[in-house]
Structure formats: C-alpha cells, structure tokens
Image (cartoon, rainbow, N blue to C red):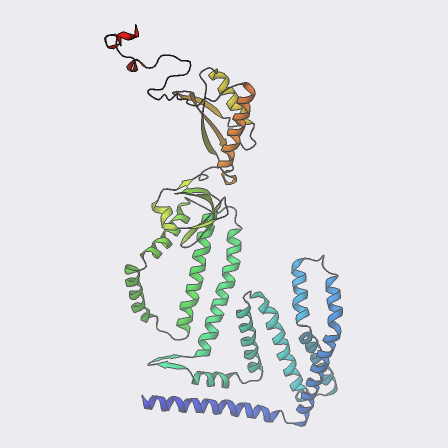
Length: 457
C-alpha cells in the first residue's frame, strides 16, 4: 500500500511539473515585444468594448421595446444577444484589429495573439448562445463554464498537459481508476443530453392525436426511464466502472424488494397496467369509495383525483387495480341519473308521468335527444311511488346539483298543476284520556252492567 501511495504521489508531481512547465513556456512566448504589443491592443479593445456597450445599452433597450409585436422566438433572441452585447462588440473589434494587423504586417506572428484572443472570444460567444437550449440554470452554468475552460485550454495548446494533471489525481480502487473531472463532465453531459431528448420527445408524443392519453403517458415514462438509465450506465462504463459488479447490488435490491418495497413495486407495476389497459385516463370521472372526482394526472405511484370541492386525492395505483372503481366516462360521456318521488292516490298517474318528464327537460343539462322516462315503481303506504330517469354528458359539472335542479323543477310543476306530495300522518291517543268532542272512552274503561253501582239508577 505504501508503495502504491508513493507511486501515486510521484505521478502527481510529474504531471503537475509538466503542466506548470508548459504554462511557463507559453508565458515566456508572450514576452516578445511584438506579442506584448498585441496583448496591449487586446486589453485596450476590451475596455473600449465595455464602454461602448454601456453607451449602446439604453438605445438597444429602447429599440427592443419597440419590437413587441414580433414573434416570441425573435424577442427571446434579442434578449439573449442584448445580454451578450459586450462580448459581441469585443469579438467584432478584435477581429477588426486582426484584419488591420494582417494588412499592415505580412508575417502571421505579428497578429498571432490577436487571432488567438479573437478565436477564444468567438468560441465563448458560441458556447453561451448554444447553452440557451439548456433550461436548467445550474446545468446551463456548469456547461458554459466547463466548455469555456475546455475551449480556452484547447486554443492555448494546454489541453494535453491539463488532462494529464487531472488524470494524476484520479481515484484508484485496485485495478479501477476513476478521474473525478472525467466522471463529472461526462455524466453531466449525458444527463443533459438525456433531458433535452426527453423534453423534445415528450412534446411530440403528447401532440400525437392518434395516440390515446394513457398510451402517451406510458411512452413518455418509458422514454424517460430508458434515457436516464442509459445515461447512467453509459457514464459508469465510460469512466471505467466494471458493470459486472452491479450483480451484487441487483441482488441486494431484490432482497429489499422482497422485504420492504412490495407496495412501491406493486404501485409501479399497477401504474403500468393502468396505462396499458386504458381502464382510466386523465379527464375520466371516477368514484372510488367515498371519493368522486375527475382524474387530473396519472403518476408512477398514484393517481391524482380532483373533487368538486377542490380537494386533490392521491390514490395509490394498486387501489385502482384491486378495488372497485366506478368510471362514469370510460367508454362514453353519457351518465344516467335516477330520482325517486311519490304523489297522492288522488292524482292521475298518467298526468304525473307527463309532468315529471316535462319538468326534467326544462333543466339545461338534461339531454333532449335521450329523453327522460318516468315509471311507477309501486303503490306505497301513503303514496304512489315513481322513478324519474334522465341523462347528462358532463359529470364533471356535479351530480348533486343537477339532481337538486330536477327536484326543484318537479316541485314547481306539481305546485302549478295541483299535484300533492303526501307524507304519512299518525294519530296518537293516550289511554284514560277522553277524546275530543266528549265521546265515550274506550270500551275497556266502561264497567260491565253487572258491576254498576245500584245507587246510580
């Protein structure tokens, strides 16, 4: 172990010495009078570009405010260019200086530094413009700085020495060697590419009208899992990790699934089944237990159901697979509702049925082409019992409110036609109390003739 540490330190020292020697040599080449002159010109142009950008900024902002009617992508492009105004001006000025020096001096060495600075400035501008395609701010910042440093070292011809110095500080585990910089840069690049492809592909998949919403969600999830998984394993393989070592990890994960993650895996598998069999999909109106609402989102572990009172229930996918679910809009949007009522025996049942159907049709949400029907269900103790059935196509608008509106229409129609809604009436008498009107009490309270008092004659 000590020998390996000594060898690693020796390698680190040699790589660092090589890097600093290359950097010192480059610095010495910049001390030539002609190159010092070019460095001075580059610095002066940098100050001039900064001052010119401060002077132009208000005028550019006023011009941009006058372009509000343009398409959004053009306005975004203007904003991006406005933020890079100092760098754009410096790039134009430095390339102008290169042209002037090329016309004044025939030797390329007389403009070498200016060409180098102009090339690096152009690379920086291109990197910053291309980085706008990355939405995540942290990833975009890391990409800009990482690529800018790489481009600078590349054009300064210091990339090989820098790579050797960074490889010298790699972490070693036996035969496995891992460069921290390589791992970070490569993994970040792979995940950024996977995220960009996922976002673009998801938009296209969700825009395909010939694919059902549930299948769209399934494709998006499979694509996301596949791309991120591929980025992860490719990153591991690229940095030199032996993937056969994941066999132990997969075994441990299998044991964990067997003991503690059954519900998690069950919900994940149930979510895939729901997407495949299309039993429920976003926008469906369902009832599960006491919960009635419409599906807002199909998640990997749960289904989001929003109720009429604004509550959002997160129902595990397993409950929708193993339990009973009422899908009010599975195959079509038609929903039939039933309400019950009773009328007096003195009212004509034919007229009651007709009036009830007309009252239901007076409600706006009740369908006209699927006409309501009214049937007698029985002769009750104090009323003739009816059932009124009608259809709607918007269960998301609520069921209780439409039932209430139909009941109210029935009440108004029955009042207008003189139809009464009876209710049971009961008369309660207390033993020993004379009834109203002075009538004789119950027979049980009157003594028999043989038991009457003789003096009463």
